[in-house]
Image (cartoon, rainbow over all chains, first blue to last red; front, side):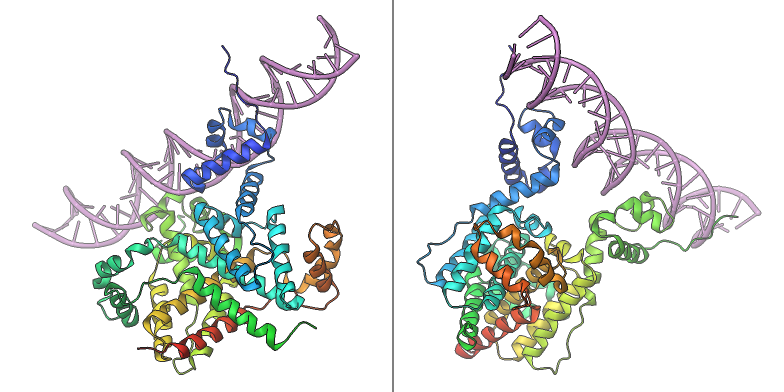
Length: 218
Length: 218
DNA sequence: ACCTTTCTGCTTACGTCGTAAGCTTACTTC
DNA sequence: GAAGTAAGCTTACGACGTAAGCAGAAAGGT
């Protein structure tokens, strides 16, 4: 009895690749492993995708497509904040993604849609073309940077105080007095230790609003 | 006549690794290639570095160490702006670096020094511990994000207008009306196309200043 | 002087990766 | 059924990081 297997397709390959990356990280996403997951030899995948890069481009765009766009009728600041937070949430669900997103030029359809929407929101709010362009670029730089740092950082936010307490002695040498004191503050619970993404988003959005009001669209 | 070769050392290996990465990108930095560059077999390197990860950690910290710290007597905003711009410049000299910096947990001595200095500047300017911590985290998220985006982006800033003009037809389908119009604006020279890093830095610094003045250090 | 330890670099080898080239099997279309 | 095409398989190549063990030279003790 020959095993009757669902036929391969680009879609199915990318879907499996996404699942594989989610479960085992970027390192576990190899052509051989991906093939195994689909009950197929590695080389068979090449009938449906050009090469591994195409797989990476594909799953990155699938992730971008998960970022949901806020309702058109939200005020621009809420919309933009929502957008940034949504991007962060999605990346957190797919921790391997931001690294990849930032490392390849790839601008898939989902990304184009996402940018176009953002420009629309800003233009609707009275931003000049130039300022709108600057605005989304600045926002995105921050969002990606923040997300990458968060994902790379080894300590879960909930454990900051505890970890700070445990590591205070490492900074006792006096070479890094400010870090030592900051660590003490965190250990004693005087401050939570890492800003939520909303902190930076609001900072940037408030600044953009002021710029818009200073130099309005021509 | 046996070739009399300078003896290996951790320092020499890391130095060569840095040079190799600079000249050929991260991909060209392999143990075999690195050995060849030093006139030595790949396995010989393992006498001086634990493994490839140690090499990567090492050269990343060397790059961080290149970021020069502004003078202590600069006002805090200039100091912070200077710091961000310096980081950007250094990363641009070593385009392979930010990717690596963000992907590994590694906090080498140069990084510790850099953070401690920044905290000192902010505390000296009257920021609370909490706000100072938020401040440098937000700044750095932006700086790294901005730098990564810039390095990944395929078009040199000088060619924006020309490239925009050449690609306008791709957006003619009407699916992305705002991007199409933005591209037109860039093509016609109505706006330069991408913000300098100073734009975002000032945005964030001005915002931080306002926050400091609203909720001063206890 | 000789022996012995240690240090440095070399050789060989294993299991992994992406993928080129060519083969085989199965399904369509007449 | 014959012919043509598509889908998956086999084998192989040249990378990669690095484990294990070897060879020769330098250094220290007697």
